[in-house]
Length: 447
Length: 106
Picture: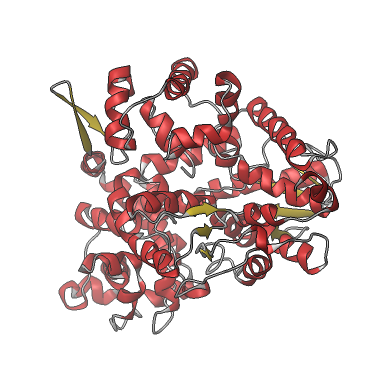
């Protein structure tokens, strides 16, 4: 992969370099430009970054990553940088700087945003790093495996290129499993139910390889008597990897699958399954990308389960989850998405012993798999090393189960489980709720 | 980049332990991958049933099968498949069947 990058760098023309720089400038909004020269080098961000905590080297300091970007900005966009580059730390946009950008924003950053909230002056690092990723994208330098996931979504309507027939057959199978589990032949997984209240969306990996979480979500809807549906065509996949490649036009095309399905099926509420970046994409970025407010609410299934419990629509018995459980905070859901308390209220009701990590919530550490890292194989070694911080946090809780309301995090936590021998089980929140459900019908079939 | 010593040769693996060149796959190589990548000392008949089906699907369609198709064709229960391959269907079974790493959150 490093060889691939060198080949691409060698092939860069002056015109391509100029294009990248133009795209970068075009996407720096006014407020962000001022932040490019605002860093006072206090160093607080170093300790906030999981990459730096795991490997304390200069290139892992967020301010250093930002400086690679700011140096190019100074050289090309400021009078002082043009006239006295050495004095103001300006660097011309050449292959060496392109390489430094790729390494900084793709190779050493999961866009988790923890540096930003710990920054003395609140520099919006993820936003600036996204502008840099977008510039690199315009030059054809997005890592191939990350881009392939976006292409799947654009061509097939889901990021794993699952065919409609395969998707529907999987749902029918899970419906049979759900009926067997609940003992209710009326337990359904509705497909294309016109006018259903909720359109539910999932991560394709649930359909392809891990359908138990989908079954658990369906079981919760069944117990709540929810009026819900899934779409058979485009509009069932909540992911949007263009959030990570930062190509907004492609991101807009992908999120439009969801809004189109809402219109097509006449649903009232768009429900995002347990996924960090999918929630951030649909709830917050989607309206920006499509340049329009959505005429319907976008909610996480975590909020919905919280409501069900609060309103008494479902009932749970926490003793059915007797082992200590800890909760992972996906960056895109919690720090970027603002969903922190619903999952905690749900778990406090559904498990016997919730042991929180330190720090948690807004100050959580990234698992290491965010920002597209899980898809970028060439940085796997760094990803697992940086995830060591999260592994230590998990181990310190003594929990035997990690609840992780994000499928991307679940996969990374699975790798950390193996790498650091944590010996934990990793589950979605819905899986824990489904295991704790008490209903009259379930009381009959369960001893 | 990784590498696997196999029959006196070196087989290139990518950073995640998948074959760099999926066409090099054969059953003896699957056994070597099982040991080095999945920590499985021996592959049972059930392992082979799953691996062969995944490989055949990949050769026919160029993609991994749905786990639904794996269960339906092999007759094995879903939980049994998870138990057979500790790293899961993607990073476990597909890797041993010599497929490239699937796209998506895996």
